Structure formats: C-alpha cells, structure tokens
Image (cartoon, rainbow, N blue to C red; front, side):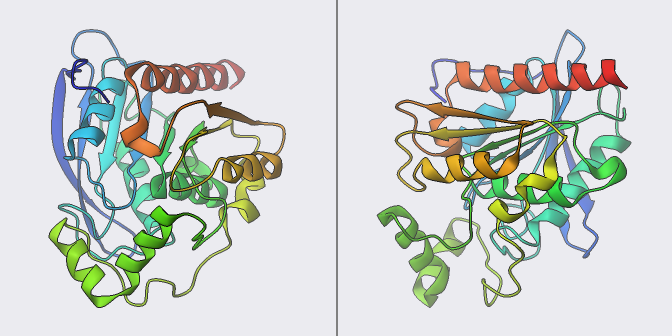
Length: 271
C-alpha cells in the first residue's frame, strides 16, 4: 500500500494463543478508534510475511479504520513458534485466531460473527479452513486473494525461485534470515488441493480476488477455483494488479472490507 495513505487504528493490542497442536502464535488485535467496528476480520498473511512487515501492517491498519482486525504470524513466521508447512498445518493457526476472535471484546469481536481474509498462502489457508470448519469455527464470509488452486505449482520464475529457497539447504538458511523456519520435509502429508475442497465452502459467501498481472500465480488459478466453488462464489480479476499484500491499494482494501461487512450484515439479517 502506498506510504502516502497512512492508516491508524485506534487501539492495537499484542496477543498470543496456542493452536490445537500446541504451537504458540503471536499476533495483534486492532480496533477502530472512534466509531464502532462494522465487522471482525481474521487476516492471514502470505508466505515469508508477518504482521509487522510494513506492507502487511498497512493493510491491517487500513482495515481497522472501520473493522476489528485479528492477525497472527503463521507458524514458522515472525514471532510465532513452530515450523511452516506452507498451508496444511497453518489451518490450525487460523482456527486458533478464529477462537480468539470469539473470546475477546468489546464490539464485533466476541460476537458470533466474523469473516476471513487471506493473501497468497494465507488465502489458501482461508479456503482450507472454511471448507473444513464446523460450528463456531466456520466464518460468515471469506475473501481469498492471490491463492493457488493446487499445491506446488512451478509455472512461473517467481514460484520456481520460491521452491528453490524451500527445498535447498542454502535456501532454507536464507529464509531463516527473514524469520521463516520451514518444516522438514515441506511436502509431507499434503491434504486435498484448494480446488478439490472449495465447493465445500458454500453456502458461505466467498470472494476470490486475483491480479491479471500476478507474477507468481497466473489468473487462471482464480478462474479454476471460481468454476469449482459453486454459485455462492464471486470472482474479481483486477487489471494491472500483481501479487497479494504488496499489490493492495487503499481503495481495494476498503472494497474488501465493505464486501465482508455487507455479507456479514446479510447473514445477520437472515439469522
């Protein structure tokens, strides 16, 4: 997000929690300053990112102008413990964040309603979590930005570079310098691909957002997910947009928040 549009949440609280598989996570809760929050949004970041990175933090603070935001460093990233699996085990992390959202207050956090928003790896985790969650762990609406449709795609130079980093000892050592610790082996026990489970998200509203100029994952990934998802899914293909958090503009962040708030309000009226 451009630096010329700073956004300041009214209240920022550092939080910790533990996952079902006993990984300690560190994160933040951001609340609007003056007006009541419209909705609670649980945000999942992309691979190699964490909540303190400037472009991630700007997205969180922009959302928190109007919404309560709960965001954690995924396992193996930033200040959190554990080791990154690039998606499968991170579902536990998102579920732990969801449960924290149910437990703390005031405002929409601590109420029965919340939405999920994920970027790249976090977008994949948001899809997997929404497809498998039941009861109060299930979100009321989901936005997935720049998510792959299947595991371990290497169709672009950027993705091939990423997997070189993940699979070579020297690459893993380099990732540790940017606060990313990977599981060994990274590809163990992969679950079904996002495209295989996305239809289970319905009737929960789902928005898939992808950049037409994404240099990691071509827009065909979003099209495949949209075709598999069913009637409750929407697709926004953004001309000129590249990949995940670094491609977010203030206007697009606002639009995502408005979409989530509208879906949450619709669910509340239907309840």
